[in-house]
Length: 138
Image (cartoon, rainbow, N blue to C red; front, side, top):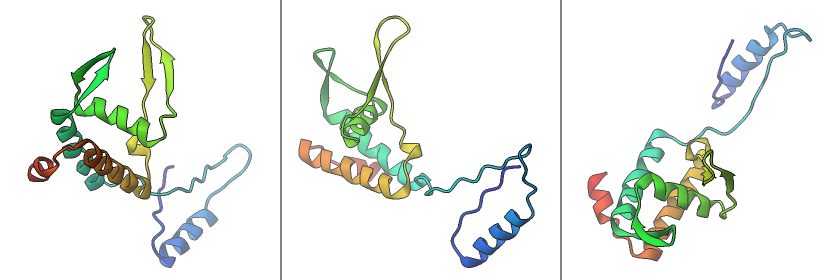
């Protein structure tokens, strides 16, 4: 049984309480209750890609000691690490290389994702990335 309640009104809270009252719980039949913030919206997710695309077309970045053009997904890896204070985790690759363990924007709440979008816009302003192209594409 999986049931999700998005608590927006008192009536929904009442419905949740009624649902909880009907659950049979014992040591052999535990139930997990989890509370959390809603994750980012699809519109928020869509808003990051034109910005990342603009960055990928206008900026090069050092990789293995050489400046190169990166894909939007690669910029997302670099910039989410910066957004989180670059407290990333590195793992040894299967063949001896190094793999950066990614940060997932899909797990960000709405507020944090809004801050992420603001960070992207700050980065673009700081690096001279023209977002007028991104606005036209969106």
